[in-house]
Length: 337
Image (cartoon, rainbow, N blue to C red; front, side):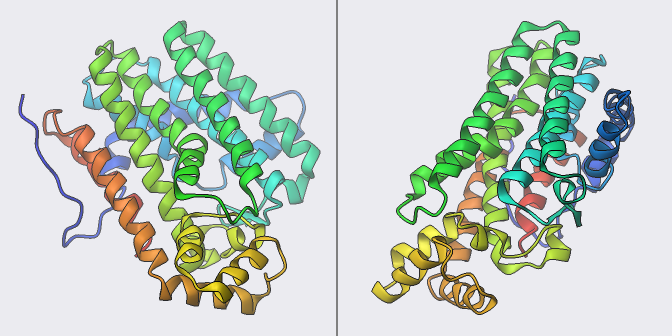
């Protein structure tokens, strides 16, 4: 088997349409599992869960599970429940995140915690985590259970790590990559890897798909960090500048702070401490990010990790699944342009 080298960048705007088309039949089955398992005799649970689950979102992570299964020519259906478990884990973390962050918007709608209250959002998030573990147990594979339960623990560690780094302008690039590797990339990696487990494809294929998902997840988060400063709420589905107002020391801020003069560094310190977060301060922050190429360099790093993701599946045979997975990486990066 020979590897096909694919370089990011081209004339055509990348799209998720090939991915949607590839996994459409499987996603219908995944969505049926999601709708069934989010039900409860307590009306608030499906109402609140449905607000977020039915409220948009690309279902990127469960789609990756299905696409990776097709890449491996897996003929079974175990991955449908597992893809639903992945989506429940992701949705639970979003519900908890919005409480921690005090977010106003999620997926272009009012955040669930603002409508239903913080206690309800946290508890329904817990419910969805529990449902995800039910689905894992039903699958019967201890290896799958180990991968997804470990990912859940790593995500929680990453969130706590980010919380402790919040407003800490001394956060290094290495530290930040460690944080996003845990809070974002871990679930991308697990979603891809479990496809190789159910397909019984062996350790080498497992680790290839793990590397694909992990690097895609890092690229995805780096792009999110960049577009928080250059996009608008309608495009992002959440408020623009949220990271700035929340004192999140993301990579663009780390780069601009390191490269700035003493006056600029004082601005970033004050801003991250919550003392310079007016609209005019956000405009000034964007000016500094532009002046020090912080956004462009963040996106360069995203392209680097995106290329690593594509390289990780280079040895797989050409076909619809490989093309869709490759274009999904390109799409994740192109969101910033």
